[in-house]
Length: 127
Image 1 (cartoon, one colour):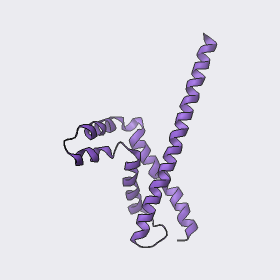
Image 2: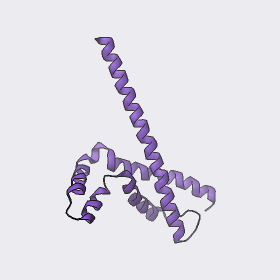
Image 3: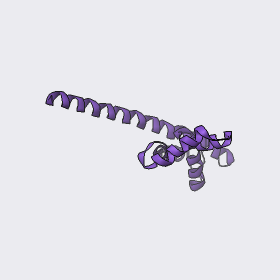
Image 4: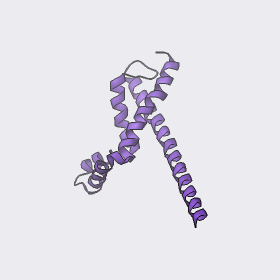
């Protein structure tokens, strides 16, 4: 696979990784399991139990496991065709996916801010 194709794969493959990691760790559809994981990560008896459940509450941590799944699914390697290509691809995918999630987080905050300002202005005009 050419370097250009690998770079395209890197940026495209990071999109579903970011999507899955963000959805599980932030969106309402997974709120109840996430709250259970938060509780277990704070009150677990052992360090291993606390860390295991924490993985499902942190988008950065969870993105590593989603990346491993996608590496197995796609057999994507970056720069090298052996096991080192998997390691390089894994860390590169995690980094790009987390950049996407950070950008998405900023956009959501900005949209929420605009929505609140619009609502406040509407209330001032009515009242």
